[in-house]
Each structure stands twice: as structure tokens, then as C-alpha cells.
Image 1: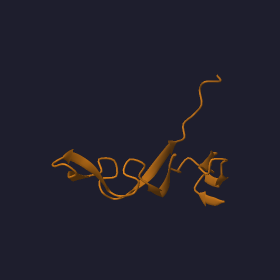
Image 2: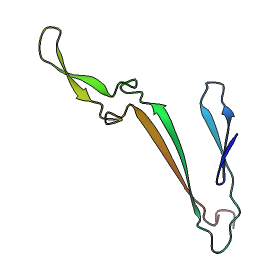
Image 3: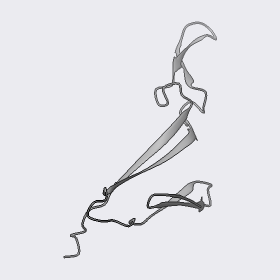
Length: 92
């Protein structure tokens, strides 16, 4: 279990995907009400971590190789999760 601000990354689900449990951290009048959680190192599903994809066909068995439009050639993706804590006025 890893703790990051008000987040706990707890185990893995049945299909081996991380779960994120969210709860409010200790807040004061001077505390920022925004938290950020970063999850990195995810293999790009579009190019399967190759960083490139086959582009236009140029010959019988020849293709241009284009940079992956999703990971932009980095091969991995990163998730930036921002949570802004605000008053809950739905129950008033």
C-alpha cells in the first residue's frame, strides 16, 4: 500500500489493475484543497510500447514508420489525477 497525500493505492483488482481509494486529507483554512496523484510507467496500448506505428504503405511490403500519436514516441503513458476538495452542498 503506497500513500500519496490523501490517496492510498491499494493492491490490485481481479484484472490486475490498481485501485485508488480516495478520502479527504487533514485540511485547515490554510491548506491547499487540490491534490495530485501521478501514476506512471503504463505501456502505451496504441503502439504496445514500441513508440511508433506503421503509417502509409510505400511499397509491396514497405511502410512508413510514424511516431505514435498517443505516447508521442515515449512508449509509456502517465496518468495525472487532480482532486479539488470543495464543500458538498448537495445534501443541504
